[in-house]
Image 1 (cartoon, rainbow, N blue to C red):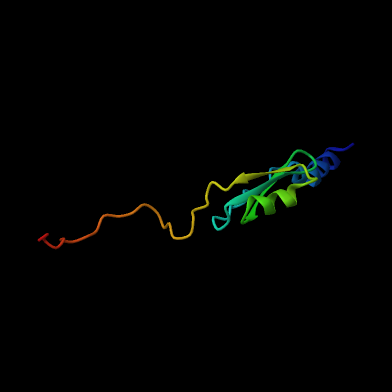
Image 2: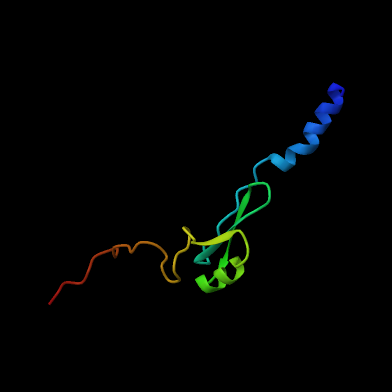
Length: 91
């Protein structure tokens, strides 16, 4: 095999062995499905509102359900902040 042939073979096969791009975990959903794929890769799909929905999808697959580490319950915009300005005197 020539050097050019070997180089083009490596270039053609590289996408199959390169790591997948990072997938954003959607913070709107509390449950994620981690699915293992042929060749040793895995993907995470965060699109489930309940454990039951995720388990129903995972049944029969090489997959598992997990808590979304980026999920925040509705109405929790973050830590509470102290009120600003002067407070009214008690009395």
